[in-house]
Length: 149
Image (cartoon, rainbow, N blue to C red; front, top):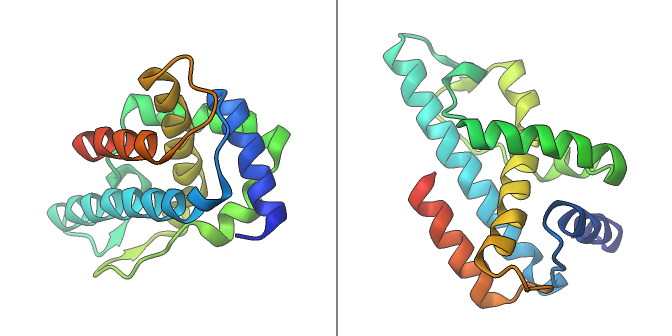
């Protein structure tokens, strides 16, 4: 991740969860969020298949109320941090058996942001006094998300 991009993510994590992240954790973070999006897309693909469609629409994705709220929070934070252009290039578009509609494609950066907000807030839930995130906290947060997503 370019330095300027990482600086914006640092600001984002401070705004979203009140924590700082280390540059060394950027790849781990990006891989995790892209894997979570892929899991949502796989479930969306299954929903499209069940509805006899070959295109995944936004309503096929299993977006929970909590994730939807995190996406709204991301929208507010994003205005200040301006992550949109970076997320456009970072949100993975993994190969699937079904195509994604334009609306679904356009929603990927917001999904990325919503998952990121939820992740940042999870760090504070794990340890309210924590100011900096280290490897152990990343793994604990990832384990929680894997149970839920």
